[in-house]
Image 1 (cartoon, rainbow, N blue to C red):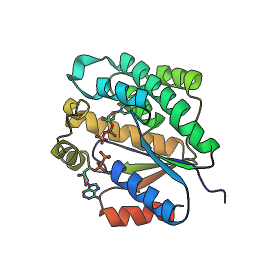
Image 2: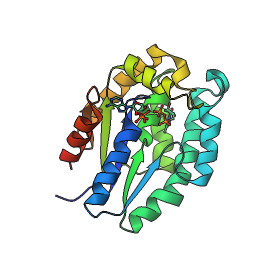
Image 3: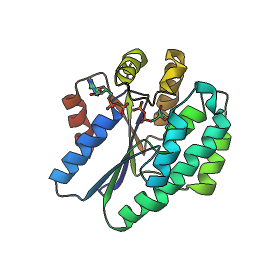
Image 4: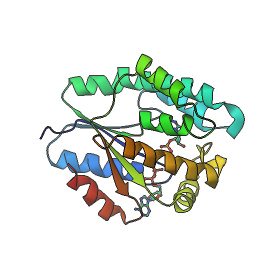
Length: 202
Ligand code: ADP
Ligand code: TYD
């Protein structure tokens, strides 16, 4: 089996993606891999600036359509400056979120904008991860965890619980639509149990 080198974590806010991305990077490093741990929106200096625009302020600061453009702009910079150079250097890239987040957060929450998301993705990004872990869990618990962090980057948490429930269904639909790439992980367990499950898939 060929070892996947571009691995992403996806799921609703507070589902444990950052924790598991970090744990997987540590695990792969312990196996001798050269790993870059990165995140979206962000992961390059320019994209981190766009992150601030997207995650702070009122929920109505941007329409879903404008968000598609901003997240894709950030992703293009992340891809050019961080992801593609690392892969070309034979490194493994573990990213906390990537294009599936745009498919669900912008494509399926405030009207059906999926065709626009897909068109811009194929025009400007055109790259999928080798493997994606979608962490599925109860939205109410995840939202509590996310808001408890008080990160100041809560614009999407502020859309509320029904929004998180819509997101959950969107991620489940993605996992079912692309089983060759996406692995569904039960996030309603301890961090150690989830980390072992993730490592077992590799
Ligand atoms: P995300 O990146 O999906 O928003 P995080 O990994 O930042 O999620 O986790 C959100 C919060 O929940 C953090 O405070 C983290 O320590 C905690 N957490 C993560 N995974 C678990 C788990 N399996 N059980 C309990 N708490 C968790
Ligand atoms: P993140 O920092 O991962 O938030 P959390 O730790 O709460 O999961 O991501 C920032 C927010 O940006 C998150 O609410 C999801 C949203 N987002 C989108 O709406 N579209 C996207 O394409 C990406 C990458 C993130």
